[in-house]
Amino acid sequence: PNFKKAVYYYKKASENTTDPVTQLKTQNELAKLYLEFKNYSAAASLLDSIKAICGAVKNETAKVEITDNIGYALFKLHDNKGLKEMEKALQARLKTEDSLSIATSYLHLSDYYTHKQPEKAKEYALLAYQHIKKTGNNSQLLEALELLVANTSGADLKHYSSEYIIQKKAIDKNITELKNKLSATESIGLPHIPELRLSVNKAYYKTLLYTLSLMLFFSV
Image (cartoon, rainbow, N blue to C red; front, side):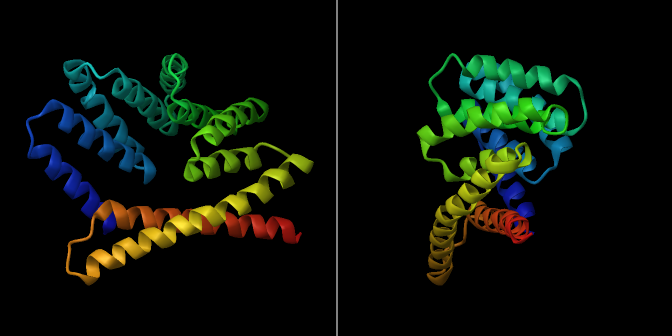
């Protein structure tokens, strides 16, 4: 239900404006929402349709982000063109100093290679990890650590698994703060923001399930 509400509000926001920049932002956020909830077909279709808006507003950063996300969606749809799009986006991002977007490209490529070439997947995950450390983005750091856990063994596996559990505590703190904000808006009668509830639910369940799997690993 929360996912449907978020989609509804993003679509309404896009329909109620004629400003290309606002349309680009809202539709791009909607596409990222589809990606987060693994609706890759809808994400790819929407991202492809907003390419024209990118050209109109001449927003290169958004264009590169859309290229990367299209590539990621195509990869998840088992379309071989996905890798080329992700690599194109990475090359464009490497010309910038935006560690967060560079890390996103590395995370996508690491995911791509996880079941194909584990060593290459590990290399990309490590590069993502190094860039994320500069940004302090705990959510992305957990993604990098998940990929490192998936593509390492022995001492490295235990090291990254332990770090994952430590970093999860920071995420738990953020989740608590988000829940408090959500409760505050509802207690004074304000309509809650769907994205806020989505971020609480998704962050909580994702970290909970993954941590449980790590606890099982350490108990063996």
